Length: 133
Image 1 (cartoon, rainbow, N blue to C red):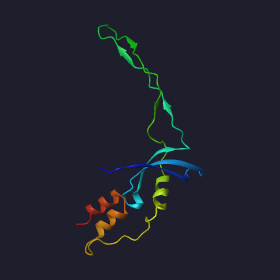
Image 2 (image 1 turned 90 degrees about the vertical axis):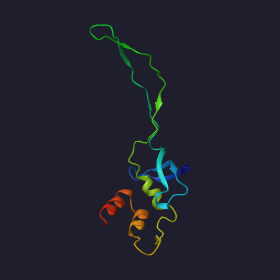
Image 3 (image 1 turned 60 degrees about the horizontal axis):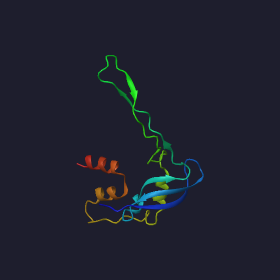
Image 4 (image 1 turned 90 degrees about the horizontal axis):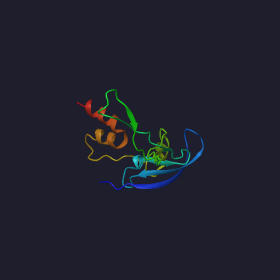
């Protein structure tokens, strides 16, 4: 299992054109172009708290269903996800040292799929693999 670290970064947001402080889930041993995986906090998007809705119950032995209010824990819940398209991850991964290094071949023969796996997204790699017959 990979050990992920939380790292702090300051970037210019591609959407709002302002400086943002980010907390990012990072794979320290990953490829430079895919090292930063997920944004966990952003200074431009404050964490929002959500109060759970009141739960309703129904008496089972009453002919027309009669509802009643169940006990509700009114403590606010905090959202664990950032509600933006996370375009700053592409900026962070592109700025990572070693992201633009040329990819070396592994064996010298039929390395096309391995090179595609290292440089392209999984969807493109899967598409190439299916059509490589």
